[in-house]
Image (tube, rainbow, N blue to C red; front, side, top):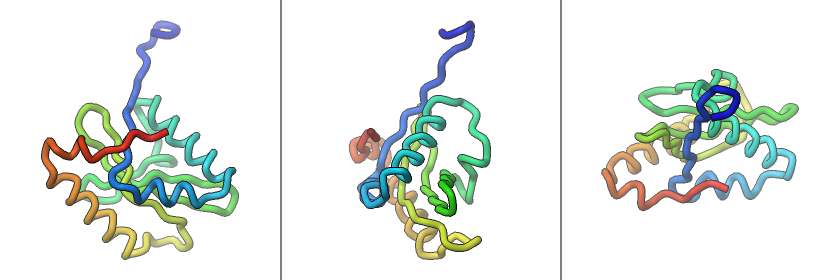
Amino acid sequence: MRDGTLEFKREIYIFENHFEEFYKKQPGDIQEKIYWILRIIESHKIIGSQYLKLVLDGLFEIRISKGRVEIRVFCLIDTGNRLILLNSFQKKSQKIPKDELKKAKELQKKYRSKGERRFNALGKIF
């Protein structure tokens, strides 16, 4: 407890390696911004739509902006305050690229199909 309020902690995990591969290719300032946004999501119970937005059917996008660079990270929320990072891309237009959305939906389905074994397939972030 800090200042009379309960602290909140959301666990953030990576499913497979799509997010990690994308993250490692980004310049340092973009990596720092991604890290900063993930820390906000990790430590706050209520997240504004400027950072986390429902796309469809339990699939969310984390929204990261740094200057003119727009990054999106597809994710889902699982039991026990787990946020699961799926795939990422740099946004270049107003619409979500169909191939990135398709990939995210496939990863979401693959993750959900693993049942309880899905937790063994997760990597802890940072």
